[in-house]
Amino acid sequence: MSSIRQTIDVDRRPEDVYDYVMDTPRLPEWQLSAVSAERLDEGPVGVGSRMRVTRHVGRRIMPMTMEVTEYDPPHSWGMRGVDGPVRARVHGEVEPFDEGQRSHVTIEVDFEGHGVGKVLVPLVVRPQVRKELPRNEQLLKDRLEHTGE
Image (cartoon, rainbow, N blue to C red; front, side):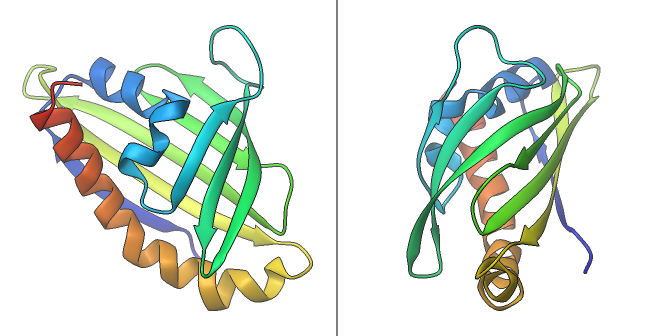
């Protein structure tokens, strides 16, 4: 199966977008399925940093550990799930335009199922994310453009 990819333009500098996206506790502000998110380690975020994200997956609430696999501020990031039945692989890019005052934000997500996740990914997770990702990016845009975050 192919990954799910969505792009939106945000009227903020790439640095602002990147800092907000990588601020773990803020994930529930712009990701509809995220119930909570917390860092699992200390210090600055970088490759190898881990976080626990608890999400609504269908009717279930599932905690999952994510690890940063790519960290290139303010250009791109990557994360992968390291536990649980549904393991996401996320790649994000922030491209400047309008002389660096605005940003093209692209988020691409794919999944790997383990155990019950092999059933959940095609039947629940992919359909949920196909619907949710455009809404998440719109929330990200609204949050950054209208609240001055």
